[in-house]
Length: 507
Image 1 (spheres, rainbow, N blue to C red):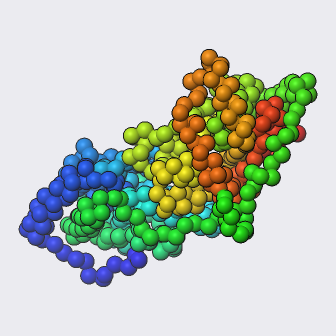
Image 2 (spheres, rainbow, N blue to C red; image 1 turned 90 degrees about the horizontal axis):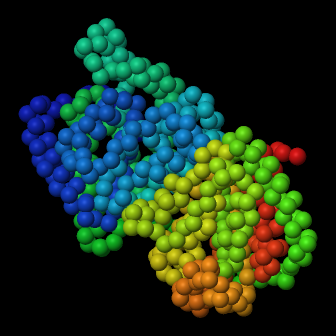
Image 3 (cartoon, rainbow, N blue to C red; image 1 turned 90 degrees about the vertical axis):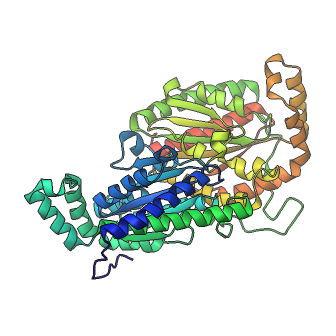
């Protein structure tokens, strides 16, 4: 993809001025139309020519309205970014619908750079490419227009520029030390660039390689591609009144159990039916076990803090299953600085304006901290699926997106544990009625809680598929019988401690 013609295309100043004027008018009009559209634009501008990349962004700021685009320059990761998966810094700054996000460098250049300096090996590079494809596919499937530009200048031309700047910096004042570093790196990196471009050039996120030898033809080509893509998507959005998505088959997780015969609860094994809901723990034994577990957890979380071991605990389950009580028994044994509890309810307007995973990526913990989630990204395949808040294609593709998301957490070294707390309908009803009689628990009960009981079988089917398709050895589901709260709490504490102990290599 990096082949450039031997003859350098030339555009006169007059020709450039005439076409640039037209492009500028059309681009600003398209940008203002985008403001009221139901999709965002992610524009990745990168390449082996840093000066050319910067000039294109400056051109956008000149031709378009910079108030309605956010530009993000990605250089060496900060300490805060290194404590989280590589894609955290991209997810957290995604633009809302109606806006343009301009990303300089970003995921493609980072992958090539890390491979060139041997920060990742060949397998790690392939893994990073897989994450790039999933990231871009997730955005595109959600309606985002993803455009990628690679500014390429042949090494002979770049070498001449660097020599000229070294002799007389005033003749090429834009050249910085970083350009010399990039020149050396890309001397070894071009095979990796080709691999990246070939593997991530897709219908939903294509690469556009721009010849960086002359700025005027480069700028016009950039403007034409951007304008054509914006206008085409705006026309499509106006015709359908919905964000468009590429046709992508629902992902199949390699961890999924073999389907069983179709039954009333769906094609997946009814894993919840196998739980022994009569399991219980006597109060005296519970108090003894609780002290032991909490002391063990206190020691492990202090060690995790010292070693920078972060973790994510996900709690899902039926309403009134006891998630809050379990979480309190976990946090009672921890220093306040070592954990953060985040409850998730219906998304806000700000959150609905972006991909559903955006609000979860933003919450990822720093090194040494435990993030405890009361509800999570699994809402997409549970309540949003059952209550029809998400379209079928949206919740079907979520399984693959979630598996990839959790894989990135694990690759970063995070401990990921997921818990489903299970009770039967009779126990839930009894707890609802008890809440009605308890002043400090009345706030927990709403008419929605009662209404959801009518969809019990639908939720069971959703849980069965969720467990089958998203439970992996690195991020397993723990199905906990929660009729007896004491038994439930000890089971969860044991599982959390075991996972931390294994990760930390503690005795």
